[in-house]
Length: 262
Length: 276
Image (cartoon, rainbow over the protein chains, first blue to last red):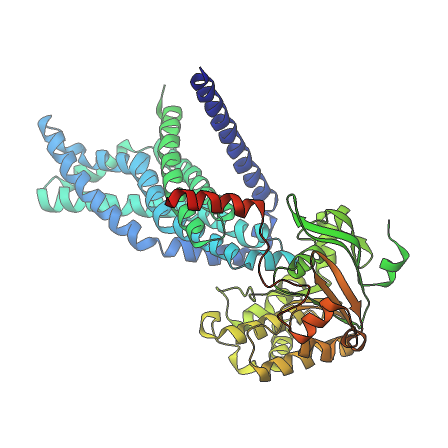
């Protein structure tokens, strides 16, 4: 008798907890936005973080982009050859990268490389009383520590996605043109003719900005909310990867439907 | 409303009760700290000394009673007011709480960079001066990970005083220091109070060092303020709790063992039941 009631109450409790979580997350976002003036007043704080989380992600982004480009070149060629349209390889590689793979894979790699380090850093600063120390020094840690990191993530992500796409196209060119022998002129001219600056490139940039906000915000939120213990920080780091990856994939579907649907 | 006493004093606790959730650590504590005074708050581990410090910085609210800092009631202070009060305070944390991504120099320079518009040369002078006072001028370039725990606490001390605040709160300033550093730190605390005219609150259980420099001593224990007075009057006190604390006697009103609680009994019953 009590089982269905218990089930309903558990579902209800879970739903309320989820709503509460979304509310807390939104409030956290608003708090950071309302303190964002410091990013303009002290741009050095942001540029330091762009260097830290952007520059250090460059290697993994470049290498991944290259291999994704290799694979796209190879698979694209095999498929297009069936229809005798291997000349369109350049277009296929460029559109796949600029529209989808560039922003999405960069965001997933960014979550693993920079997101985890942001969560761990904030969580450990909290555990070491560094954030509390800042607060009693009348320095708002949200403004001084978190806001520059958020803006650095938002700035770094589109740049990294652009690097990823660029290196990926080079990878596709190496495999398609240099190794397989697709005509170089067709490869580049089809790409030039078929990729639209607004429809494709700008939409890709918008995607990567949205992912930049999402991944960085999730990483900062998890660090900020982490229990100040080794176990708490480790759990928060794991949650950063899981939550931000799922959010990126879900948002990507939503954005693709909005941007490229009729 | 600001009471007459709190307007004259730098820090004023009026019948304050402090605790976490339903649990009350300290009841009915009153304390006044005036400019130029060194006040030691003493008591055993877990007696609520650090909780008092958290109430003084506005990190936690009193369950009852009022805490005034610089005449401002911290319970109804807005974020801006709280920030302006905190700018006049320096706090030495129990674990130092140094910023691990900055080196020693930048740690001490941090409050100056955040709250003043001094030139780089002036910042360098002031930071090196404060590091000189704690004997770590030549450690300015080291990373926080490269210095020992005791050195870290001295850096934290330099950081707490670099803005020359009107009220300095020290949480266990002598813990983890070697005897030489301990004596120097005690003299430094007294010297800062005399020179800057700032008020100092020491949270400590080190009887010898704090009695040597304190003007007033507050002894907390058993969830309340047990005694207060000058070091001389406390040393002459016949109160059994005071005597046990000062003489470090194993027997007296303070039990060494943590008292049994219903939660412990419950846990124990389950623990023993589970083993059978």
